[in-house]
Amino acid sequence: MKILLLNGPNLNLLGRREKSIYGSRSFEDYLEKDLLPAFPDLELEYYQSNMEGELINKLHEVGFHYQGIVFNAGAYTHTSLALADAIAAIETPVVEVHISNVYAREATRHATFIGGRCVGSISGFGLESYRLALQYFERLKPSKVGFNYKKA
Image 1: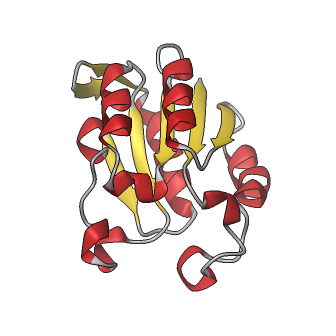
Image 2: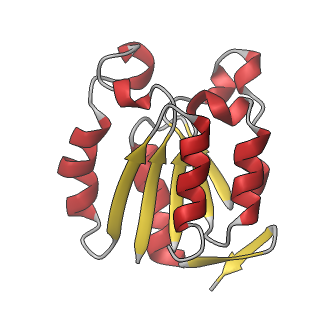
C-alpha cells in the first residue's frame, strides 16, 4: 500500500520553529525513527514544498495510483481553493492533518478549504496526527468515490 506523506509551507522547519506549538523534532527524524518502523507493511513516501503549485503537481502525480495521502497543507489549508480543487480532482483518498489544534488558535485557522474534500481531518496531537492518519489507511483501506468516501 503506497501512502504519500505531504507537507506544505514552513513544515521543513519543524524542530526549529515555534517549538511551543510544533515541538522540537524534525519531521524527517519522526519519519525515520517512529513512522517507518511502526508501519513496515506500508510503502511511505515523503514530500514537502513551500510552493502551492508544487503541492498541486504532487497531488496530480500520485492521486490516481497511490492508496492514500496524508496531507498537512500548513497555512494553505486556510487559503487555497486550488489545493481543494486538486484534492477533489484525484481518486486517492486524502486525510488532512495538523500538528497543532487549529481550533485552539486564531480564528483564521478555524476554516479549512481542503477539509471538505478530504476523507477526514486530524489535528492537535502533535506529530502523532500523522500516525493516526496512517492507522486509518492501514486498517480501513478506504477508496474514494466522487466527493464521497467509503471503505473498500
